[in-house]
Amino acid sequence: MHIHILGICGTFMGGVAALAREAGHRVTGCDAGVYPPMSDQLRALGIDLIEGFGADQLALRPDVFVIGNVVSRARLADGTPKFPLMEAILDAGAPYVSGPQWLAENVLQGRHVLAVAGTHGKTTTTSMLAWILEHAGREPGFLVGGVPLNFGVSARLGRNASHEWGAAQQGQAPLFVIEADEYDTAFFDKRSKFVHYRPRTAVLNNLEFDHADIFDDLAAIERQFHHLVRTVPASGRVVVNALEESLIRVLHAGCWSEVASFGDAVSDFGARGEPGDFEVLRRGQPVAHVKWNLSGVHNQLNALAAIAAAEHVGVSPAQAAEALGQFQNVKRRMELRGTVNGIAVYDDFAHHPTALRTTLDGLRRVVGQNARILAAFEPRSNTMKLGTMKSQLPWALESADLSFCHTAGLDWDAAEALAPLGARARAVDNIDTLVEQLRAEARPGDHIVCMSNGSFGGIHAKLLDALAKS
Image (cartoon, one colour):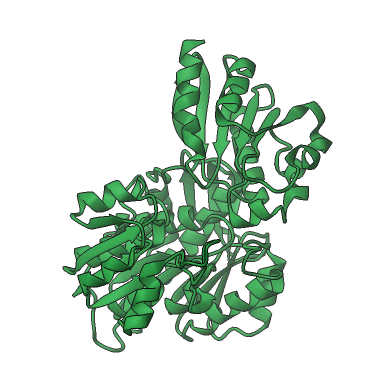
């Protein structure tokens, strides 16, 4: 079929496009400010991209329009539609569907779906799990909200799907690993994306309040997570972080599947040792040993979750640990962008106070107490831009010696929010000024971590260039 994707450059919709193209469909798409890296990846696949959401695209007459959740019925100040193409689709009665629903009906059918949900660590854990299954020879399909370095692509179909009912129950269905996002599906379907995926193995990694633009409180998100639990069959497995009270509440609301816990002393899966070199315990008994290049307790927990999920499809903890020893992480997850004059510059996707803290705590464990950490962050997610979690920022940045907040576009006072850190924090409204201040402060042996879920104004390249000239 011919599908035309609205909002094609987002990580999820771009992954859907890549899977559809690999499956043999003709794929076109549009977005505002068609941007890399997804635009480059899609063009390399031969997918035609159109700038903007003009109503003239209705003339393409695809078999179906696939709608990303960036699209809405919003109006501009002058009263004209922000997304004219969507209005034209509705007026014409043309067929349309959300990205998650199209994926569920055209890719996930006939597969054993392993879905990784949680406020933090979804991309990394999904990538770990996909790599464990690949290393074990299972040829999984996957869709990740990033680019796992072991694969070099964000999505692939993997082994052909079986369309025989019962194949998954008998353990014969091909595997598909998917990052299961709790954000809503589309303007016409306000359920979380992950409700569409119907996994047989569901990982509940953690759960905090986030997405303040669409959820009123934590209870509202817990309700969506319970909707996910309701879709897991009795022969399935729910892998749950036993350290999270919110997830315990989710399970107490009802669970009809096997539960495998991880994280605390009495869990099914635990760890003994430092995050970079630890034993994996199965109900208290050593069953595997992980030695790898990742840091941070959060990644140790991510590893336990991936190991528990892989065991459900027949991969032993020892096999999984061996694979993790070769795991190369994901682009933009503490990715070292360069070292100049002894100063290391990292790019990290952290965009929530807890993620900021775990990133910095993990780096501190690696570099020790004597090395300096300089943190530059951009409150760019909808939740952070609303200022909902600004009071948590001093806590999030405790491990950094000096923190810089890029304040452009914020409606709240970042300097006031960071005041508890005193001289250890600065608010800067211009990227070039931020780069100059970092350059002036940095000295050999420092580690500079740039944290944002956006491009951060190209700060990494600008900073490396400035450091080279100083």
